[in-house]
Length: 296
Image (cartoon, rainbow, N blue to C red; front, side, top):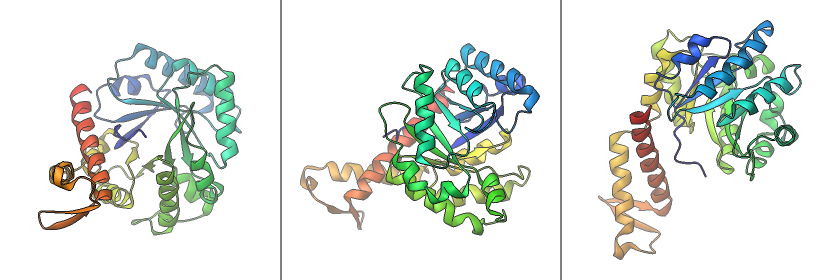
């Protein structure tokens, strides 16, 4: 399980904008999605593919996780996008409108036919009504020796369009679908990245939606503007108090007198082994964030 890699902030970068691709090397984002899909006009697809390949080949992105979003399986650009993505050798490839486990199989077959390195991960956009109905089956297809399905990315804008639900403050119409995908992902060790917040100038609204996503169980959030990075990283990072408490739990369970116990008392509070496992993840993520911030 890839629990050590923070995915708090995941910033979309249009593949057709060379200046933006270069700017990504300086931004405090955990991951960059080099977009060949929605952010790129049809007449700019070829240019975007070339620029993304050149950007990844040139390097300079530090420890940031590099992801390429291709166009969907049914589009005329998918095959060329996938070939370009394989040539660029990113950390992961993000595919829109994944709706069934058969879609995941097809993508893996396509990658294998292109001779793609097996270490490339898959990310799936969860943004159709069918994906909501099949979330468990899609997640179950995730574990694999090659092209592992590593993350769900919630496509809330497309989901609202397809379902006719209203995107509004609090996202009440979306909560059931967000929770379904979180449950499916957690069952099969798949990270969950929340959808974008469109009104990027509304700082308070954005911060509240980040908190909501975190409280629901999300690992991070996709972003459309660099101004969203700092608050997003803040919300999805473990607090100092949380890390200190986690370390105290771990140390307590490591004491000889507590070996083999299922529950113990720490500072007057009962904690169980499940809390110890949660504590270990908190500490690992905090250390990864600290190291990553230094290296970015």
